[in-house]
Length: 452
Image 1 (cartoon, rainbow, N blue to C red):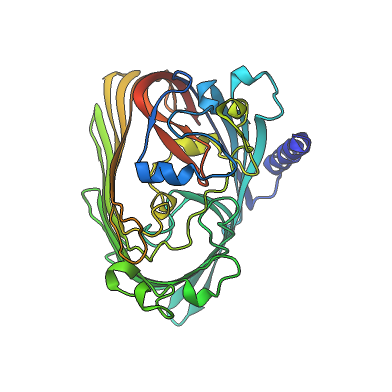
Image 2: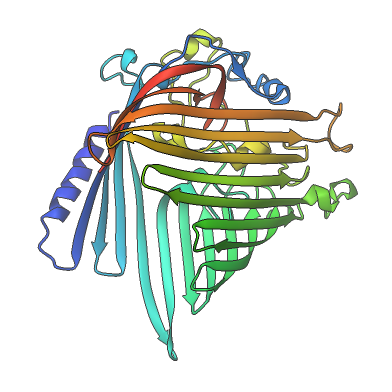
């Protein structure tokens, strides 16, 4: 908190000075976003998760809890964030995005609680240029900064995750070459990847509605030779005029197969993704939906799981978790409402072959111009098999996470709503990546949202 006022002052001064600039080649765009929720779930409410995952999490030396019940989190006390978002266009070639988030992480913790009041920036700079080559242009795009809910290739490894780094793209006619470097994924998230480095080539068809590509990825833990953690990918997508998107990706890792025979085997070394997404809009009814099938071989996720506590301070019992919502890193409130599925969910099954089916989306029906009914659903079925070389004793696991949120919303103006809901998804600060608890019995809650 001691630097928060200085940070906020600098940000506001920059915004005001930029907005007052008379330079014709600078344009400022200002948006705001706010969201708040209060979950009325009881203390120590029972939660559900796969027995295999629960056993592994109980070995966390920083957190002596059973993982049988819901732990304290901001949304149980009413929490909110407000974001001031700016985009500054400097001519046609430079774009600066500078967002400032402020969070009250629990009203019942007390006004201006230093442990649970935070201000943090999200920033990125984009450079665009073009160079004439014969009768066509070489387009160059460079993006440096923080990327929220990032997705790389078609989303087999990098998806639903916040990252920071650099992306460089070269586009000539229908061909694109890209280099992506995402910073450390060992500290802020438990994927045990030092730097994620990707080189990719993509060829586009049909006015960019379809594409196929290939990429070479290095995703090695710190201090590990990169040659043991390389991934070869092929991917593609098709966007139809009916609003349906099809996408797929196949990946193969050499990992330690170069050194030991028992690491080898196509079923062990590959991962695959097949997905479809759609959007339909009618006068009173709208639907957004996606379905994905994923498979990760038993070797593919080796060394990419770390259960170190990140998003709260260590605790000896469940009572020390009260008023304890920030650790070395922050689990932002906005991150709670992203889908459950992410690579880290599957890397927790690190030595098992694992298959996942995810069906997620939302349905909205307008009862009246200002009142609507909405259902958000995020159903994840995960099956982990066994591998005779790595699993002792052999254990398989089947589990379904049927997350949902059924709500009634009142919207006085477009982009603003208040609502009452019933849900079974709550915030989980107790593992090495930002995720959610599945609460065994649904609970009620209230929320508001503003986007302008």
